[in-house]
Amino acid sequence: MQITLLLHNIRSVYNVGAILRTAEGLGVAGVAFSGYTPRYDDPNLLPHLRSKLNRQIEKSALGAENMIPRKLVDDPRTWLTSQREAGITIVGLENNLSPEELPRQLILGRPWPELLSSQRIILVLGEEVHGIPSDLRKLMDYFLEIPMQGRKESFNVSVATGIALWGLQNMIKNCHP
Image (cartoon, rainbow, N blue to C red):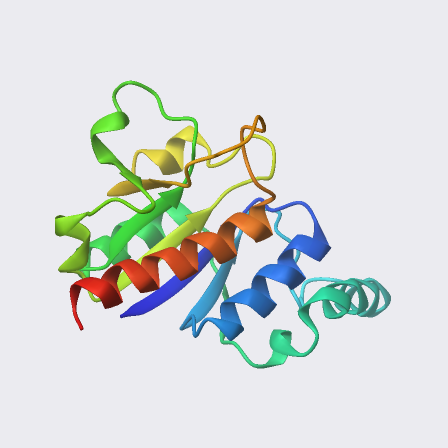
């Protein structure tokens, strides 16, 4: 299975670094950046700002920022549409679904037969507080939810990414030994 991440409007450089480190450790094929997500080695920034941003991401990525393929996606709607047309399954990591989105809900730890047939997945991560914006949510084939055991409603985006990646890989591995 090949998983690519799309980081859309992630605010924290430390979350970006932690996601890069986790993604590399779990064998993610690549990471795409869109919206205002901080990017490592962003050529659009002035050199002193790029250097500062790089140092901040490096603090939590610990070298993974140079190990995993990265790309900039200017228009995530167009990019996700083209990826779906190429046969890639689009999954949003989201826990606040509207009633019309509930039929596309996948809960980590429960079987998902349709998803298991896909060998390529894009896991979309949204902004830390508000999640994936509605215009992108319309493009999701599925929404992955991590069941919460405590009183909090959600995990930090970098922690949720690690749980989701590990869960996706193990759910599929257990169904295809």
